[in-house]
Image (tube, rainbow, N blue to C red; front, side):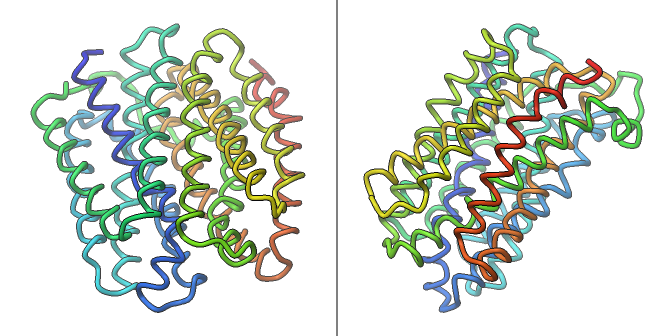
Length: 374
């Protein structure tokens, strides 16, 4: 892979992640700006995630008939316009629409990048590329979350639009075609969904995303409503969590290169489960430690599962690359909805217990699921 393409993909991950987690932290500020309740404004989280999950399925198969560079040019352009309009929206309903469109266009970024890496990078180097890409993604998230505590929320998405414009120029003028249209294969989601190895992988991905986002998309409201924290402290805590993710994303890529990815996945799930023993603490210092470890543990599972994906058989690789992003965000959006229902009916303690137990069982069974029949 050429250096310019590597830089373009790095910028792709940076662009997509800038403002995603920040929205979870910004819900109280957006609600105040439009004079609506936090329960109304939090729709901005899952209205991005659900369309992301639904549209992500089309990009992998589309690479069989359209060059990756051309797909990128279209989707990055759409993402740029949507982010710019979101930053200028004058009603909460318009923010819902533009956030929805950002999810539609942004859903192409990761599957196309993973396909390009899988097709052009040597097997022993793949995990290092994946680690760098997602570490940059988490750094971008950390930066936007940190800024969300100090600047007006609209400036976050105006900045994301500007970065998208730079990315669009990189794609148009410098990116290779990544032309895989001459490979003889058919759109095969039906075949992929009957492949045992692929479906077990997607089951783990979907369940993990469901449980993670059930907690994390509500965490800003938890800190604000239950813990009485102000926007600046909330943003700093989200920043610390993302900083932990950046460190462990880099370390996870190197660790996977030396240790089997499935071991790293289990370490991450069990650590996230352990965190729930302390999450209701009123000690602010301990809360900083909790969110740091939570972010790091999630990053370990993320990079390990992504590395496992790039080594799947070629006949299912492209479809699973799209379905991976689809399952992450579709089930993540459903998890965010589920978290809201549980909190409204039973409170945060019950939500934390359910998700902690779910993560424990994922850690316990994931190795058997992902090695079965391999």
